[in-house]
Length: 271
Ligand code: KIV
Image 1 (cartoon, rainbow, N blue to C red):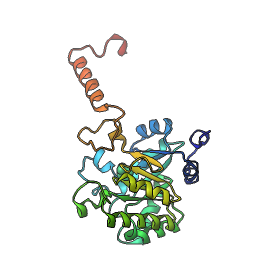
Image 2 (cartoon, protein in one colour):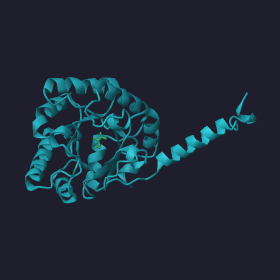
Image 3 (cartoon, rainbow, N blue to C red):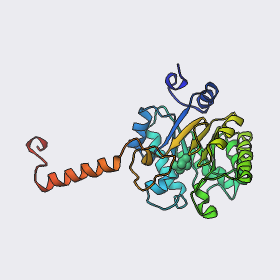
């Protein structure tokens, strides 16, 4: 039987067992109680309380404006709904890059208040001191390399990363550094499939891809994108499983018409 079916609660140990057995890991984002409950009950392995909340929940253009307290609010809401999945909370921009003590304090606050299982940070060598300090407090850390949305102002575009040899080599070195430091998994975003597979082969820890091909150990998508709630965002790596935007607009339109026509509420729908 697969590890996925056997276990009642996903831990970092369960994830490494999945990698050992060649069982792919399924990860999705969630930001609120109701959605997280459905996602968990449907059997997801990891729920990421992503800082993509800045885009899909708060309507910002980038992930940069979201604050630590806002991420904690989303994390707390998600944790209350989850019984099985491992929950990872993104550390927001500006809470871990400059100073490892600040990184530690931010991570401790996330863990203490949300009761999440782990935190995620973007970057390699540049933030390794922060990663080590967070890990030294016994807090599991997930890394994130490739396209790092918190660095959008440095790169200026959301195009595929690490296509050139120098950047690909740095990514491999960063991935190894994160593994050596003690990260339990790494997300690779929007890089060539060949490079994704190479990193997954070279690391013992699970490598979860978003636009990193099928050769990695698992996949992650933003829930709003895979359910078709976001309409204008259509990168090649995105598979839409529903067209919820159209469904919701249709339902709301029907409701508006029913209210206007006095069809709603009918006699059975009132006291
Ligand atoms: O914030 C987020 O949703 C993420 C995923 C894209 C991996 O970091």
